[in-house]
Length: 75
Image (cartoon, rainbow, N blue to C red; front, side, top):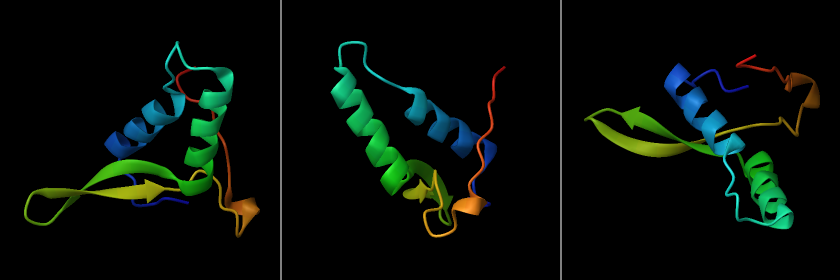
């Protein structure tokens, strides 16, 4: 779904998806995860000239749900 993702960007996206503040309420955590799933996860992409920009990695392909697969890592 995101063939442009490098391993470093994938790690960055995974960290953002798994991160939560221990002081946040369950409602707040769920809201944050909902926006990541709906809008995509912001990752840093290098562009020519040594600069960086933010790109959004999709979590779910809402147009073609069959394209969405989930896997467990770090097991």
